Amino acid sequence: MAARRGLLVDYGGVLTTSLAVSFGAFCVETGVDPARLKEVLAAAYASAPPGSDLDGLVVSVETGRLPVEEFDRKLAAALSQGLEVPLEETGLAARMFAGAGPDPKMTSAVSAARAAGIRTALVSNTWGRHAYPDGLTGSFDAMILSGEVGVRKPDPEIYLLAAERIGLAPEECVFVDDIPVNVESARALGIAGVLHRDAAITIPKLEALLEVLLA
Image (cartoon, rainbow, N blue to C red; front, side, top):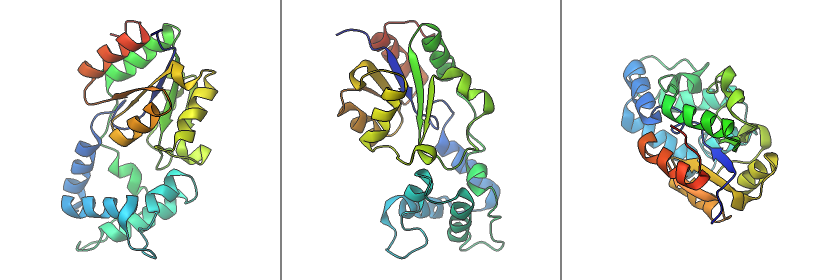
């Protein structure tokens, strides 16, 4: 098989350190029970009762239908249950992600791929723009942020859009994400999917698929 010429990359948990660690630090700082955080996020993603403030909350913010300020307000209210002092709602999502910093090995690998002629695109589900550093755009030929394009992973349309934005067919691309369902959705389109767990494992896989040195 010919080498792939496009690299599509998730942001949180792939180009950053662990989001789980960041969420844990948020719980320590605020006093939110980690079990409560897990329960609230599960409901906000999929399983809240219809009519609940959490019903469809994450899908709405990630597709840009709900302002991040309203998302923060509803999430703060749910997470404040059981706390003596309610959480400050302003900037809540940003504070939850504040403990995740860049993974230098992965960010360097993306930069090396682009320098070698690989076309690159960031493909990320967004809870607002706060998570993305200003200099990030310099590593990518295109940035596909769900809140701006109105579609989110694992919807196949977002991968097709990313490939189109960098001028390639899906079969010419590789996609890296830390969530299995997102990787499987990309693979169904002919994209080579790489499930990320650690840079030491992911980078050699990318080197083999792209046929370039990244480290």
